[in-house]
Length: 233
Image 1 (cartoon, rainbow, N blue to C red):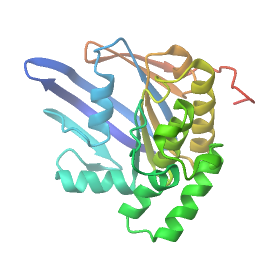
Image 2 (cartoon, helix red, strand yellow; image 1 turned 90 degrees about the vertical axis):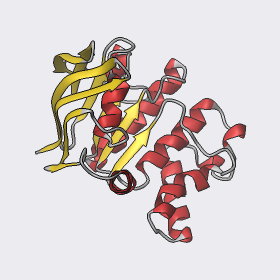
Image 3 (spheres, rainbow, N blue to C red; image 1 turned 180 degrees about the horizontal axis):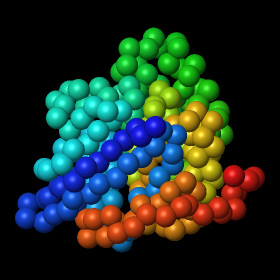
């Protein structure tokens, strides 16, 4: 079943087009890597698909509904309830502990504090960082911060996870450990993942790779099997 669609999506920043008519489909439960050189429009495409940006021209459809026509409030609500978003530099709230950061999306959705904390602790444990539950980001390593950010993106059990260079700020080993956990949990939950990366090795974790060049889809291909740190795919 097709879950996400883009049809002729154009998005410009001033006179410079970042996307020049992108069309693509993403199936339910699929892990898709969007790759290409710097400046090709990867992050802009992800932001349009996630409803963070509106395309200037074209359509973005989620489960048969055009979300590009929705209000900012409606698109924000969609991201709180159906989508998860993960960025390169986790963007944890500095004043909150790890558990409070992970619980935040649930609290915003109306979940009670006790239930939200229990869920947050469960997800921190799944990512192997339960020991930092009551620690603030400034006292964590980069790997711990990104694991917490990934747990926060998945705590609401979203239908789609949008990940923009999620391991870009990490060393190779830590990045692969985080990505291995992310992919494993996404597959267990049948979560669709749209992953932006410029690294072929990271793209190889995906079911399919979509290559952008100069704001257009250059070609698509299958992801390649790669060794996984601590186990197999």
